[in-house]
Amino acid sequence: MKSVHHLMLSALACLSLSACTPMQQAHSDHSAEIDTPQPQVERFALPALSPSDTGSTQNALKAKERRFRLEDEQNTIDIFDAAAPGTVHVTQKQIQRSFWQAVEVPAGTGTGFIWDKSGYIVTNYHVIANASSLTVTLYNHKSYPARIIGAEPKKDIAVLKIDAPAKELTPIPLPEDSYEIAVGQKALVIGNPYGFDHTLTTGIISAIGRDQIGAGGVTIKDMIQTDASINPGNSGGPLLDSNGKLIGMNTMIYSTSGANAGIGFAVPFMTIKRIVPQIIKTGRAQQIGLGISLLQPRDAAYIASMYGINGIVIQAVAENSPAAKAGLKGLSQTANGVYLGDIILSIDDKPVSNYNDLYTELDSHKPGDKVNVKIRRDQKELTVPVELFVLPE
Figure 1 (cartoon, rainbow, N blue to C red):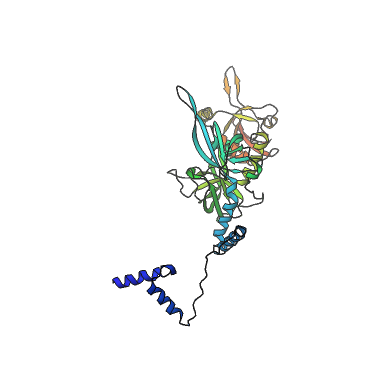
Figure 2 (figure 1 turned 45 degrees about the horizontal axis):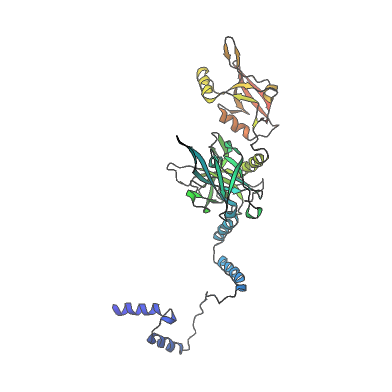
């Protein structure tokens, strides 16, 4: 048994010619005298290189490596190589106050992506909320202080600005408006989960058209669901397709433990394309409405319970607004008390019972669109057409 083990060790050693003993070398020489065709073995050893040859040889090696990779594997590598420089690390600090002093302390990290070469960065609103200062770190590990340009909490979108040279900025490309996301297509996530920067995970689009309550307390419509791993720190990072284009911004996960459970949600690219330019231009997202104000949720719930109302009580109607022109009425107060005005029951035949419902129904419209507002007034139901407009600041 020992002799067999000894022979096995000798055979392994002879794979390196310099390791052979004289007896083993002689055996090799003797074998070479036999005129037997030897199998051709492809060798990967590199010749000695001059400095001028290094670049061309590395390119040749990369081409050879690509040849031995699966097509999908190489596609993933190519997307990461192209998109990682467009993905950034967002770090925030907050003021912590004690009895004696106020100090700025690290408060969390997230991800963002480069919008354009002017230095605009897009991330989630909840990544930058309550920050006293923000820092953006690029793929090249250079860090820049960032200032907030504006945000739309209802969509969980925020825009930052850094003063970095254009040559250091690689924007993430956007698809055309006609692009359609399909369930089952490849999805890639680049982000900074748990502070580990530029981490890549892959998966598929699991579902589309999901409605989820966002950080702003209202529903974000048409969110993209993916099984690509999204963990704390991935928020604000890009969700990419197999062409390396932005199809969404990673925003939240569904989990009972706080860790990834294979169900993540991203704000769709069309919402981002609509909101971000508005924030860059004016510092805020364009708000579409009727020209009414509503009761605070607590007061609304009290009145709804008292009067058995399943709708939205109009508190007041703004002067010269579309709602005023359509004749809508708010609460009125007399010496005898407060009287209900109009109660909105539905928008375009879709029932509404709170602000979230109203916001969701109006969100898909543009200024100038007309909606049919069904109201209850003095125990009678009426339908009134109202033209939507941009709410003033």
